[in-house]
Length: 201
Image (cartoon, rainbow, N blue to C red):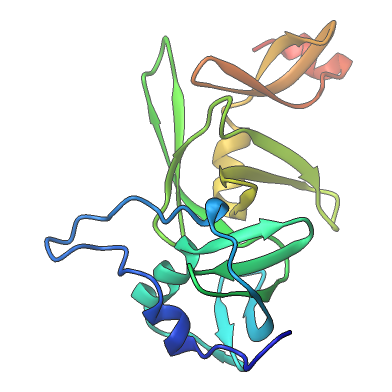
């Protein structure tokens, strides 16, 4: 039976501040191992631009957004905030995070791409955190990065140009593909056309 909907304050109070007194971030809560009662849904929404809203108003405190981002998980098609004592559903318009900064280490011989999200996660693109590409409504490429669990970050449009500029040709699944190499793994964008194949890597 679903009881009263939790408030923003009760959710925040049920989990530890992700930062300790020394400012060093603690390990992420083990939300995938928690199985508290389902308390329904609350009026919280993550907009496509990454802004978090509660009851129609943007949450203005970055530390509070960061805290909630650490207790977010996806169960099937449902996004939910999870504490040891309760879980509630929220609305996510696209994916919960944005990749807003990119860095490259290990060049030129063993490059690794790193992204920082709008909520402070730092993730290296590798076999466990793959990069994928979808076609947007306007027909352009929209890259996504797996941050943790099954939570994705969408790469911002500005970074997408920088990312695609790094694409090279590689043999993949028996053909020539244009894609990105990071941490020794190839992430395909699209099969090479005659024009891209002639251009070479």
